[in-house]
Length: 219
Image (cartoon, rainbow, N blue to C red; front, side, top):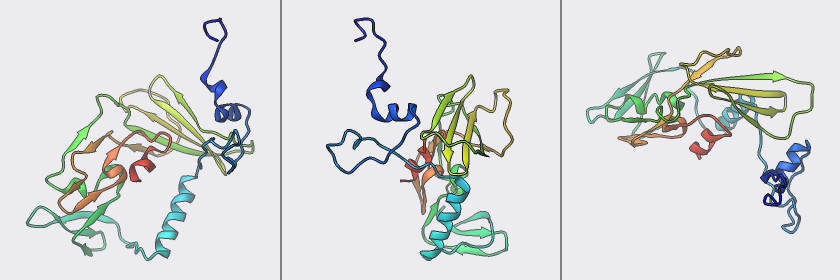
């Protein structure tokens, strides 16, 4: 077709892309013979409500959430984490710790044996601002990623409106929306399991928060 001079886009031959352009969505049918059976779909979840739901479910399963906040890690003689210290003066000893503290890597970062490999040379974005806006307009049935002069913007429709994330390098001078800036350095730990600390998700590796990559890292 292109050889004959006709303009051809790959999206013209993808059912999901055509449905998105038309503002339409339907769950893929179970019948494998149906032309839409192979259309993949996902969920766009509001972060605050999703976090609240996960905490509630974890408590139902017996997870105990200390009322105090993390202060630091107490190291043992062998270089392992012996206990976690909280701001109410208490300590939580254990033989194995899971570090799910995100890019801060609070436990893994306290180990003298921890080495972080930086990807800043290839991936310079190190700041993200996420805002959520109410909207009375029906949401688009897809997420939109837009390349900017410095960084990129991700827009996701959620039940209450629109969630927008702006990711950019801190060295760039751009106009920022109102919201809390989350700083991070893209890279990974050389050893996600060091001594008696196992780092998962953002504590083990940090990639730009685009299209659910942090969720894939946790899985």
